[in-house]
Image (cartoon, rainbow, N blue to C red; front, side):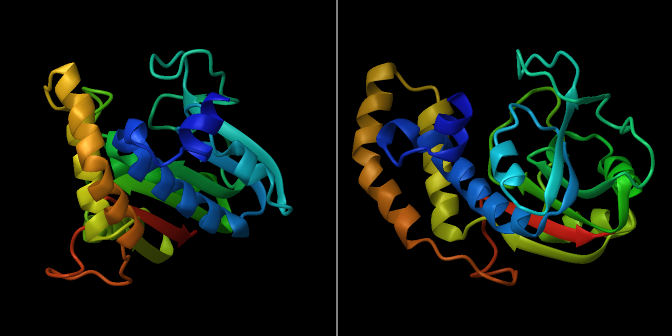
Length: 236
């Protein structure tokens, strides 16, 4: 039920403004990109494993394997199948057909080491799908390392050996502004009454921004330069 409410069916309401943009934009990307998954799938940094039902519903997927830190303080009660140290993946080479890693790479001090490990455990022509934040507050501190541009993300992926890299924004200008408003409401030092009042006052603006958001297909330094986060797909 927790995964369902927080990750898979979050309603658009004043109470959910802090996490609505990030949760729903990632969910849309997961639904779209995992449709082509097949065989054995590794979920790196799986956390609560909220997207497991989506992956397992793909007919060509034979097995979902969640991997995360052992006894993580952020995900109490979750027991991943594989336990790693945040760098080395404890499995043999070429054992998975597809790998996903949602909101993980920003926590990796050496991202190319992690990506190289993912490349190692993928079978030839295996697929990788990741998401990373661009607009988000510090979190899981002190293990919050990076915010990626499309260019740095592509460089890291290609340096790790990946090909056919495709990078997309998880939203456009309006979604980015809505996300910033949500973060301000959720984490700025406001009195409780002020927070609730501003949430009610700002919700119509937030709603309009969500409903009028437009993604772009390419990046530049002007009208196509702001986004809440990124997704990337690549092949081994």
